[in-house]
Each structure stands twice: as C-alpha cells, then as structure tokens.
Image (tube, rainbow, N blue to C red; front, side):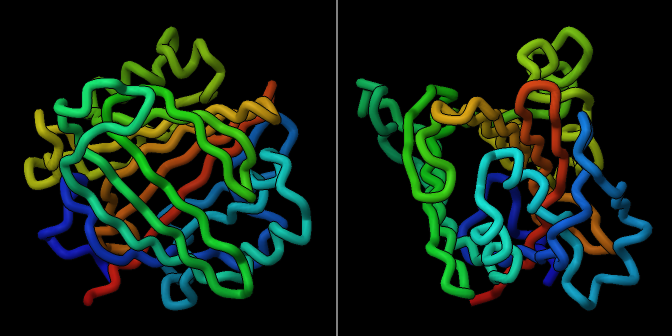
Length: 243
C-alpha cells in the first residue's frame, strides 16, 4: 500500500512491510566484480502485484559476510518494521541527557523462522556501537539531511566518495523533494545512516525518504554496501500497513 500523505520523513511511526524481490541469487546493483542486473522503475511496473518492488538483498548480505543458509532464510521471510519516532534523550556516549534529539526506534520482525533485529537511532550524527546476531559488531551514526547536502556528500570529492562508502551518486537519486516532503526540523527530506563493521571491514550508507514507485508514493531506502573495491547498491521499498 502506498504511503499516506500524512507520513513524511518527520513521522515514520507505524508499520511498514518490505516488498521483497524473490530469487535472491541475482539482482542488486553491485559493481566491483559482483554480478548485477540494473533494476529500474520501468521494469518494476509489471511485477508490482508480485511484491517485487525492492531489489534483492542477497548480494549485499554476501558482501557483509552473511552465510548462504541465513541469506536464503532472509530471502524467504516477510520483514515488518515497527517504527517509533519521537524526541528523547540521546543514548551514550552522549553525556547531555537534557539535549533532546529525534530518535527512531525500529523493531524488525521477520517470518520464516528468522530472528528479528532492532534499529535504534539518534539523529545527532554521533557514532554508537552495537552488536547483533546478523551483522556482528558495528558502529553507526544518523542525521537529518537535505538534497543539497546529500548531493555534496556523494559528489566527486565528497566525504562519501573520499571514504569509499560509495562509488557514485546512487543514494541521492529518484527522491521526491517537494515542499510536502520537508519533514525534518530544518526542512530536510531525508534521514542518513552511516554504519561501519568493526569485525569485517564493510560500510553501509543508507538514505531514507519517499519516492514514486510504480506510480505510487512509497517509503524507500537507497543503500550502498561497500568493502574494498566492491560496491552493492540497492533499494528497499516498503508498503504502509494501516492500523
């Protein structure tokens, strides 16, 4: 189901279900030696009713060191996000509990016997360490970002290019950027997440926002997973689940 007009990047509260692409082995938008198939909105349109709006996640999970059996289980699972977005005290290592920040707490619930994970983010761009069964020991940071800052981040000479988080501007493409999308405190239209694996050496850059997919407004994450000279770029597209 398309996202209602009341849902913006400033209010993701509620339930969202990932529209998974089946198959798993192919797909993705990876480069640097990983086989990929370029997926566009045009060739997604006929598949809409089969819930294949998202790109396969298997190539990215493989680059992150996730084993074959786990990847197959994830590919078969239905993943639901239970999102709570609110103002609250930042978590450690920030030592200023009175400085309220936007927090996004997400419980990811999966079927097919796959254990869920949690995404708990403070939008102050401070690195916080976290460990879970799927990705191991990582550190991540999150913040609001607008289209101009995002374009600069991934441009030639930008921090994301210099740091080898991305190889192109994929994460900055296809977004809805009109006035109605400005849900951030200073009119930002996106949330940016940057994660580094402390075990395996990969990075993941996510940009959240809204896009027109198959003629409908959808909550989408543009993601790039990188390790060494390999990059996998893919979209995760979500259905809104009304209460």
